[in-house]
Image (cartoon, rainbow, N blue to C red; front, side, top):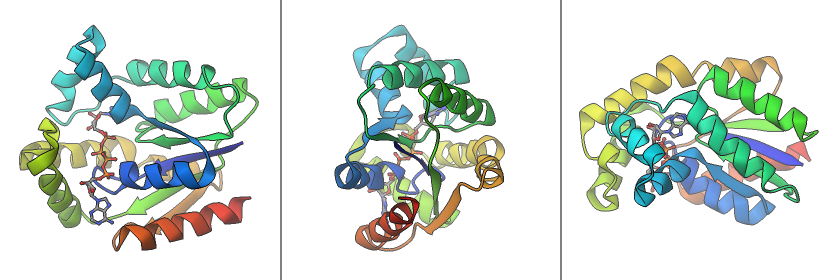
Length: 191
Ligand code: B4P
């Protein structure tokens, strides 16, 4: 199985590139951000709880996102592999993912990290906020909080995957096609 963690700060292009990678490599796309937004749209109790945190730019509790990923993994036993987009975001989530994949007799193949500076991230997110309707993209102070959460809780995952020899950095600034080609070359080397 080909199991990829697509990693990077908010606005790095994870969601954007996942859509293209899923098509090229026939993988299942698991985005915790999308799963949470579906819960919000459905008006579930989980969605209501998540919205309050997401609107402040704060991460949702580990148990919530780990539970969502567990149910998606076990309901796709025939998959070629998965792209984890926006997950894991904490060390606890990464450890839980390793354990879940072990139960399925597989593991993470690589973490592909999109590298983008803060100035570009803020510009992209505010730009998306103009037409996406996403409340967490509308306000610069919420975006700053998301970047702070990323630096405190998520960035340490680069070391977690480096220690396993699974970290690959990719320049996340440039055209969508150039970045996609760089990601594809890194993935081809894994095969
Ligand atoms: P996510 O939905 O994961 O959103 P994100 O980090 O903002 O990245 P996204 O993938 O959407 O954006 P992309 O970079 O593709 O998370 C939202 C919130 O959900 C979190 O803050 C948190 O509260 C919660 N959450 C989600 N997962 C969680 C977890 N595991 N644990 C706890 N909480 C969790 O694109 C951004 C913009 O840039 C787009 O407009 C795109 O068009 C543009 N763009 C992309 N590539 C570009 C390029 N090369 N050049 C120019 N623009 C580009």
